[in-house]
Image 1 (cartoon, rainbow, N blue to C red):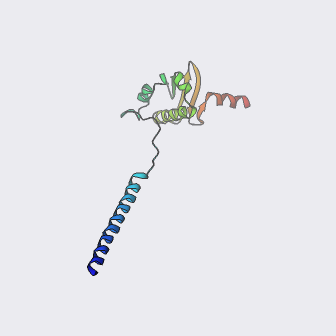
Image 2 (cartoon, rainbow, N blue to C red):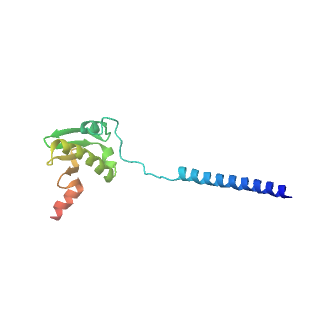
Image 3 (cartoon, helix red, strand yellow):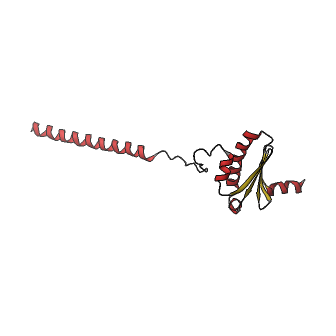
Length: 142
């Protein structure tokens, strides 16, 4: 009788141990695979060598038709894709261009974006991003 009792205890011990090992392994697996939800970067990624060169960025951007530097001012002519882009995307692109342009041309630099000859967006050190509609509203209210 005593021997049977020990065998049952031994098998129960191994069953419980195996159950605990499986449970802990499952929890570790869930913890390792289930967490860390990092947000992906949604900003445009330029190929290597383009990120810090404004001329290469402007040539790479499909929304840009052409551009002309004029002293401290950069005039960028854009196509219809630029106009159909949301204002936040336009602001982000223009801000990136301005940071590169300002680094090379100083604090008095300015970027003017034109569509079919009409000024649509600007970026200056004093006012930052200004859609053309905002400038017209400010001058009419004054």
